[in-house]
Image (cartoon, rainbow, N blue to C red):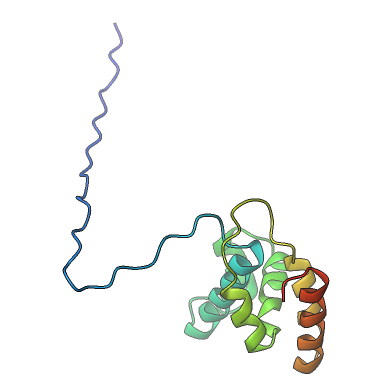
Length: 134
């Protein structure tokens, strides 16, 4: 007769934190997911940090560590070329409760390909107007 080894899983439930008198609690939690373009830009910034700190020497290292192809890592890293104010807007986009955010990563990479931040800002404003996001 074969015996199946038993498996025991233990975990501890943490009690809900008590509200301290006079301490401001964070605002209501917004449900939904961050837009894909926000998550991808955050990843691009993380990849850049990996290169700067020496955790990776080139995109090929990042590709190996992240199990991505080098081309995809380059696509993601391209978002680092966006003007800083555009990056800030993208990083602080609100969560999308359902569906997709109307501006795609591909559209933002096209903007990142523009050499001038002035041109990038103009195209970003046009894209927001086109999608009624102003």
